Amino acid sequence: MLDLRISVESLPKLAKGATLTLELAALVLVTAAILSIPVAFALNARRSWVSRAAEAYVMLFRGTPAMIQIFLVYYGTSQFAWFRESVFWPIFREPYWCAVVALGLNGAAYTGNILAGAIRAVPQGTIEAGRALGLDWFKLQRFIVIPQAVRIGFPAYTNEVIQTVKATSLASTITLIELTGSAQMLVNDTYAPYEVFLAAAAMYLAITFVLAVLFRHIENHLYRAGRDPAAQNLKTAVEA
Amino acid sequence: MTPQKKARSIWQRGRSAILVAAALAFCSLAPTGATAQQSCPKTIKVATEGAFPPWNYVDANGKLAGWDIEITAALCKAIGADCPIAAQAWDGIIPGLQAGKFDAIIAQMSMTPKRMEQVDFTIKYKESSSRFVAKKGAVTNVTPAALKSKTIGVQRGAAQRTWLEEQGYSNIRHYETTQAVELDLIAGRIDLLIQNTATSSLVFFKRPESKDFEFVGPEFKGGTLGAGQAIAIRKGDNTLRECFNTAIRAIRKSGEYDAISAKYVPFKLLTEDQ
Image (tube, rainbow over all chains, first blue to last red; front, side, top):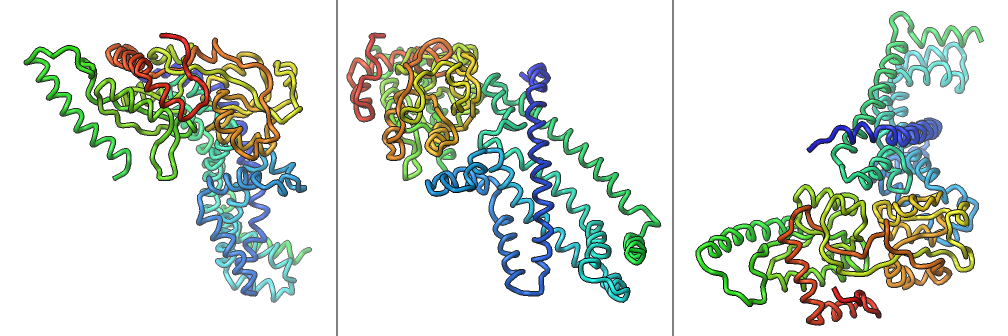
């Protein structure tokens, strides 16, 4: 029998877990976003060894399950005594930072790939226009390439954000009591997996729904008619 | 064929066997005094955790092995039933029993008050206690106050987890399996672990990495930690419970119980008479 009271009663405890889920997702997204910029430029690099190295990195993280990556970072690193005596141990000792490192590196591979594709899709004409104005490489990227690439890659990035929120559930395998972890604990207390996991699923759905709406708004703002980003930025660049 | 598929087909075959047996029993008077228990089911689907060496685990060939597996075979022989065993993650083992995915849990389950609300238990099939393990010399006193600044690792579905919370211990880390707890104790991510005393001495202290660790504090048992370990069955499944109870007494009397146990532990697992 489905006892929805158990679902409702589990919500406060699940909400506590959800705050850790959001915290982890935010940290992972920031880490991934920062790392994705060098990854994207490396992927598009003319020097073949740079792009090969970046491709290998993306391949490695996209081609293996995030769960294995978390296990490698958490249980793998702790296996070696020399590593446990290294300067990295204070970070890798903590399950929290292991989750951020593993999921951050994973996210950087996906986000970097999205950004690299978006950069390649920036119309060549706008870049030539920028060059004609005498912009140096850095200004060209800053005012012409990146703003357009962000708009091009944004819809794909929305997916990545939602994937990241869900991927934080893997942190429950390394002792973190986030949303999925607290659901598992509650199941052990109540022996009512259906009710508890249903409530947890509803919470994930609520989080991703809010994110989807938020990103839709940002998207609308980015693509608002009459605001040609390249033209806008060219003006700023020339004035600067 | 995967083990589950195989188990299912055995189960299906077993089910038709039950029908035949039921029909036969209906037509004739069952002979008394046979070794097999007459009213017991001919097929009993058993679940174990399969991740709790040496009690139950998956061996190098991918097959379930361990004390629970051997005891199950002996019990089912005494009952005269076919018992396909499948591994089931600890977190879902009681819900799985309640959902009818299997008929009995033979997996070192302690009879805790909380579990007794959910399932019925047979008579005790093993005694157990719980004990803390820590780095040598690091911990002397194991009261909640003394361990305030220490991190304690425990399996999240274990009776010890509820016990830790009830006693007021803080800084608890929760793991899916006991092996994961042991790995993190060795790695120094946690200061202590608490688990079944025999599991620690038979598994953890057999590992070379455990040489710097020791038992600390007394053995804990009873209350939330449970009154010994038993086979769990669905609430109200009295026939099956009686079948297992009779079988447990029988294999203890025949010496089979002690013979199997001697392969695993250097001491008696059950001493008192049931």
